Length: 98
Image (tube, rainbow, N blue to C red):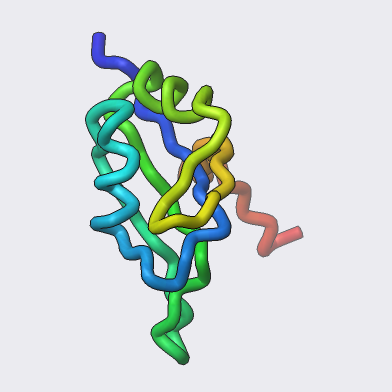
């Protein structure tokens, strides 16, 4: 059975940090499946936060256990990101005739 994926929320990123730099920092803790940095659609500027998804929860927990992370000289905040819950189409009730 494959290990469950583990996602971290990373805040206070420097303006210059993109997904590649974010990935490079966290690869020291294990195999990174996905790295994302949020950008403002109007300005194109970084919103200074992003997400790292590890292939395994063990790797993610190792990164989370690190007390401080510095990326491009700035200390960033790292927290566990709860998995999103999506509604199953069959569970959604239709109240249109109520």
